Length: 95
Image 1 (cartoon, helix red, strand yellow):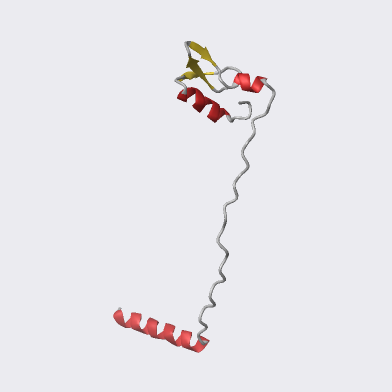
Image 2 (cartoon, helix red, strand yellow):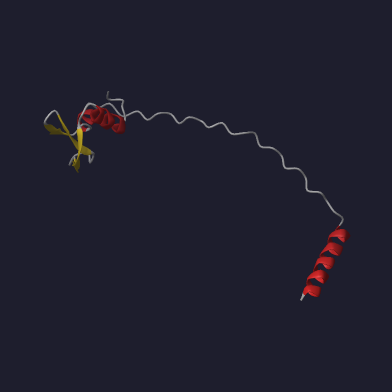
């Protein structure tokens, strides 16, 4: 049980009928529990055992392969300039 994370240990006590109190342990800072009529810290005994908590290894998230972007359609520069001129003229006529 010393390899369990503190959250899992506390959840286990809640499932067994323990009550998490608003007070925290002065030693480790985790919430105190009332379990079987006793108020106790459920984390300090685990830390005193000297075995460190093991953190789970992160699971790599597969990423989709990167798709190359399609090249933009290249318009001749003169065509772009003429379309811009037409748009400016059209907007000026609306004023």
